[in-house]
Image 1 (cartoon, rainbow, N blue to C red):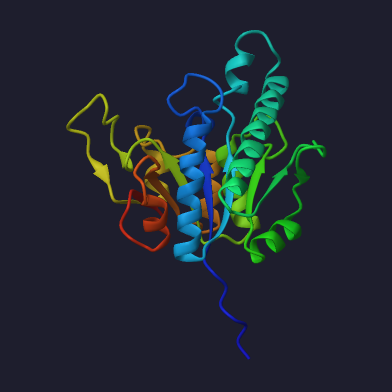
Image 2: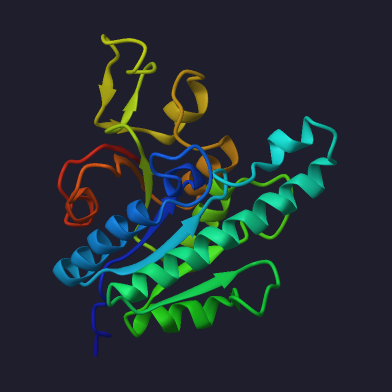
Length: 240
């Protein structure tokens, strides 16, 4: 007998800067609340099993503080701790909007989040809970983009959604160059070999390519885009 087909399962990568909303620093509760409402609508409409990996650049970026005299590894751990702040804020606001959610982290901060355990995370997803993963990979010198692709593979996600402030990937910065060309699809090789194409860092792209995990880059600020991507509509740029 064939096992029952499971619901679609996706990983959403949120940068720390998005948590700041219109602010220059910190967490904007109004923006996070709007995002939580959209995620609640998306889950109800699609039945998706959702994992979210969060960055921490709105609070601390390890590579940046390392240039100011702090050791790079220490700076990266500081950045990972910043992702925990974003993660527990998102879980709190999701649950205020009626979405059951759990915070997991690859750094040990047991007072505020569960340790990341793959099988426990999958069980949460199967029970309809959103799993928010913070702490990067738990190791310095690795970006949260790579952490997102790694978690997407571990949790058997169908794709990774890379949320941005533009509606896809362009051959040059569309804010500076009105003639910039948008790509509807890209191959992993194109992304790795063209220095003008920015999607994720090369380690994340290589990991996704080696394991055939598609990445969709889309505009988070357009309401309904998350639902449209999950339903297979042509939104943003798909890298596969």
